[in-house]
Length: 220
Image (cartoon, rainbow, N blue to C red; front, side, top):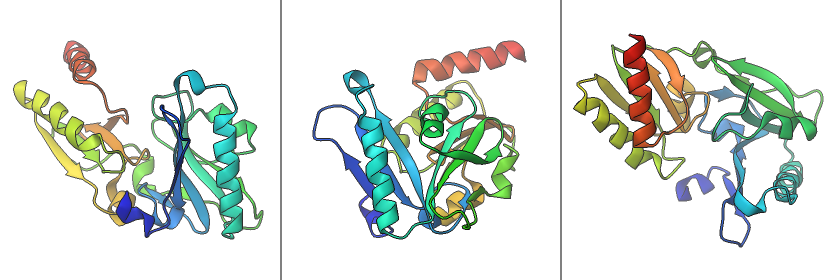
């Protein structure tokens, strides 16, 4: 995160215990497979626990909007999903704030934008990520970045579970925004693929991952 401050990253959190923060940066530098210019990409907006439904998320977004306008940006963008998914901010929240769907990627991702300048071109998902497929050998591929500090540990824990079961797997760490545009998942932080097909963006607990493997085995 410290390195990304030099690339325009902004991280703001309330001075209380709990998850109440917003993180955003210029879309040109974001670690997601998105092409765009002069927009701010919201990486994460999170308010949890007892602090929900107090207007905190709206206040954080309003501050982000004011900051983006002061920097001459053409608008904001954010990755959401067609239906509520873990770790993705609810689509309805952004709809209420005036965001509109600008693009989509398989199987459920949507890119929403809030335009300040109606004449400005909107950001789009890169063509390579839209199909929800990636060119890999048989087995699982874990694609991740250190945008989330927990990814490093958990990805290797899940990989070890695959090894225990004799399931082929590989780990691909994204080390730059350029790499993220080339082969990152629409979520950016994490993507799980099986035999080249997108499976999930959610970093699961070890137990949940084992259950998913059990379900996949039963279907096979």
